Length: 131
Image: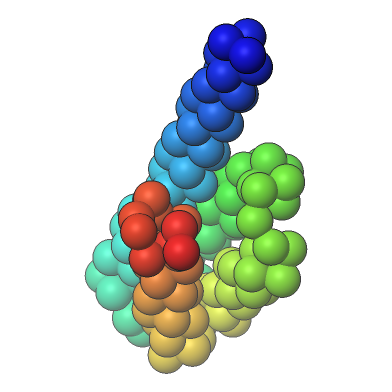
């Protein structure tokens, strides 16, 4: 009888630790993306007339590539459709920057930052998300 309780306690502890690290990875990934998008947004607003510079284009693509590396693990943890929406948004931003379309690039950046902020809230450890 005592052995069962010990095994159940160990399994519960292992699950709790796993959930903690999963939550931490997801939130760190989204925080990184939000920070990267905000810095990209600052770069974008510096010269609104000519946003198709080499540096801004490469920064937009590098954010997309780095996010794609994180997605490999994230797809095991979260819904693919939500990740797909983020991937599409990042691709649109890069294309808008290449096309020198400030209005669309800025709107897509603002939308994606807001989307990621709300999306990451869904994975925070709270009573609302548990029940």
